[in-house]
Length: 448
Image (cartoon, rainbow, N blue to C red; front, side, top):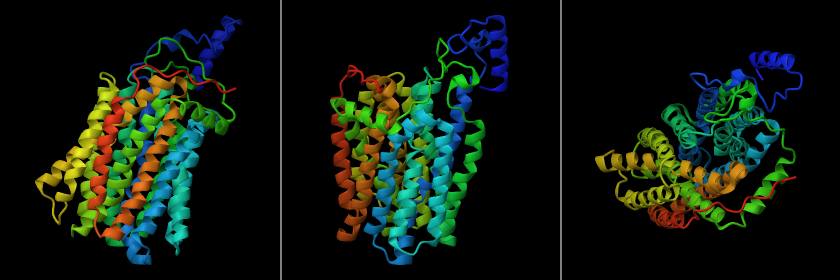
């Protein structure tokens, strides 16, 4: 609670000794400020995710330099990226529970520090196992604690209205970070080697830590306010102990519902067709067709520009339209675009490729707001943890394709088969989205 909130609380307790401040907050708290504090928290979260997004921009830029520098195969490098992506997802549900136990601010600050440590240590590596340790393990664990479960937790705690819009904005932050860092990192790799780029990622993560520690707050009650759009004051819940046990208990209950498997399956395909495929292999694929790395990286950054527009728009649509149908449309259009991609790759940028970039950018993570909405609809208070597990499937799908894409390139000398396979999977995800149940699942049992 801030100093002003403490002063208000003191006044109430002096005039009414029997009052219970946690349940009956001072009347001044019921007044809505012109700009609710929730929007400032969302802004800090947005900036934090942007700063942490630097690590997401680098893997696709590292494949060719590491292959040339150390002679490692693309499959070996892809395996390290796969470990990173898998841990990014598998850590997310535990991070959501840790935020309930220790607070958002502490978990995110530690995660950013771990990302900086892992990225910084790569400059001294000499063997492939060190790449797996630094970029795979450390950056994977740190980034997993900063995953979309972070955005889901902030949205659930601070907002009861505009949740779709806010989740879209926070999801778009990652794309904004990609937009900012990808051209810069590609220029650094092209002109100064990959090591300064890795140091840049480390410094970007560290630079955000003070913002998190000084400006982020765990709950609206910390500043004596209601969540945005709430009619009543919500007391801050006590810390939830047994974070790991709670995470696994929620998973154990969720896996008994068919909705969970449909959400996890569609989101695994989402991860396979974005982080695992385009983000990891688009730049090397264009380089195979003699396009300069900086040009290919700039195209990937343009995807980030339109991703911001598409994701925020998707959040707006999610507040107004059926999320199942939105998911079906998003996946069907994504699959169609991937089937045409092999015909568009070439040494220069031409209008059909620009159309693909704009289209794919609008659809990149537009799937997140409706998926989050379905988790909230089906699983209530445990939705952030359930979404963490759904996100884990997203990253497992991304990890498999990051590895298999590099392996396919080594074996077949081309990425064409990978594009076609991913397009077919997206068509399957569109059908899966339409059969997700429309009524909430049975409430998950409470964790004692």
